[in-house]
Image (cartoon, rainbow over all chains, first blue to last red; front, side):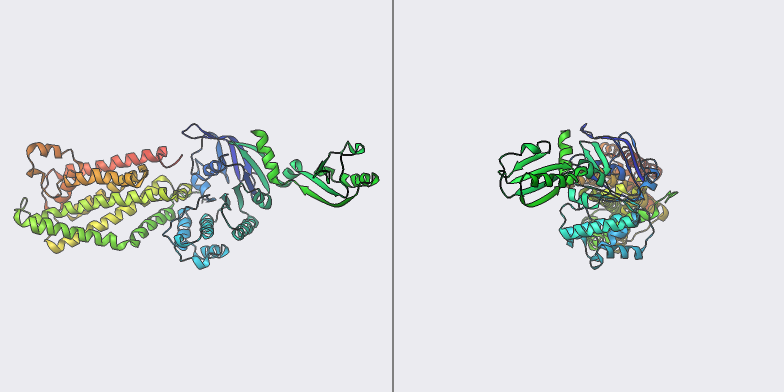
Length: 307
Length: 258
């Protein structure tokens, strides 16, 4: 399958000679939700802004839905919608006017029925005649999304969509994104809320210091790098891990009250063996719990091993 | 959208947006020039004009009308166009313009077109207002409209350049206040260049605004400080210069893109 966006050897240096992107290669598949993770200043926004036409690319090239973003910018840009990080709006315009403005700007004939439906999907119908400056931050964010979707793009960029957004809107946003995906829209979002990527994304790319250090399916990524741990709360504290269990990756915590077993996902079946051994040694436990390392743990370990 | 060669909806969206901005402040936009013109007539026309004999056979009141219109068209074009493009830079909404499938040329048509429309309207309102104070004859109405239109477009281009260059509201005001307004006052709006001593007369010919006002006055009364052909050539020349600067800005992305 040809990717809907392909980024090839893309670089970007700013006038200050700061190199924001160092040869990015990335292919985004049609219809997927791709999350771009990375710390502040990693180059996430620069990458998005280049694809959307806001920042001039350095070397390399970007193809969006078969169109070179520089040579064939009209065709490329009319396929793309962008919700930027900052809430930049025309304070004195009404919601209705600003969303229709965006549709026209992106070269589409007026379509009041479509815009009406869009505002409805974003719970903005009540606010259609309100001036944007009278809206709350969350409502403004919805207006930004409505503007980005006003020309029915095939590709939607969400740059930090839920930064400073309340729980309700965040849930709405996630619902909206998965709804868009079922309609065939490809979504690329940047975030540093790992739970957001974990919740929504099909694939995850990690960017650090202008380099894409990893791209993988979310599930594969978690399987590959995710560690699990089993914690047993013991009836009687232990002084040392019994020598019979030396081959197991065990350690004692909480002054010998907790016995912790850290294992790879693929070794989960060993747990029953371990429990039998323990019972054979007369070690009993009151309770047990298992934990899986989150994307956040994976992410932190990835970025920190690089620095 | 393949084969889209001119984004008419995009141009229309920007044009409408800019015109809507003027309509929100319709009272200031229209009442201000009417009041200002009336004040000029009270001061120059009635108070001073009665003591000044006519200039080249035209009453002083009527003589200053073309200059007053030009003064308003220059300042309005600069203010409208510079503010129009500066404001999205200031609020950050320019992201949308840069990410839209509109060419630089289309952006220019929309912003400059809207700014020029507004200043032509203001110019015509001043002309109407002046008609209440002095009898006005327009010998060459087609030329009158041509000068008005080209000057409005030219100075809207200039305003667009200022708006892109400006990094703050002070800079937005700087060129109009410190350069254009003095040049306009010294450009023969209120006097004929012939009335100046010879040295100053030659010096005046370096002032571009002299050509604009002189040509425009010729279209009214058939008399001018410099030949109207030269005036017209200079007007078109300024247009070409500003267009060249704008093309360079767009080519390099100067102060628009990183």
